[in-house]
Image 1: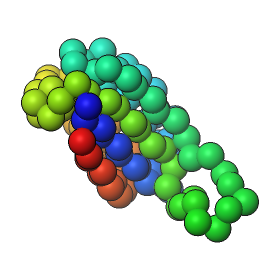
Image 2 (image 1 turned 180 degrees about the vertical axis):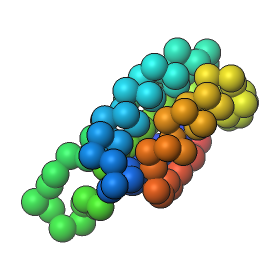
Image 3 (image 1 turned 30 degrees about the horizontal axis):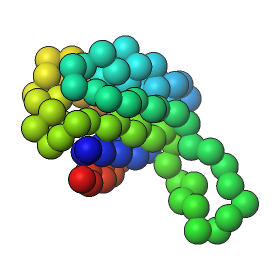
Length: 99
């Protein structure tokens, strides 16, 4: 199992940027071959101080192995997401990959 977690900070100058990131991930990333599980959504507020609440959108994708995730990174739909959705709507991103 290989997990790919992406944390997005939406452009504060664009009120619909977070929604665009969620919709774009659903459209472009979810159908890419090799994805075992896919979850994208907006930050959930919490009363716990240990929970980071500075981001806007998170993406969690699981693959069967690292090779599948490597193939995902170069898939045309992923590249299209980066150009059409990510770059116009995001000011910061952090990625956590783990096996």
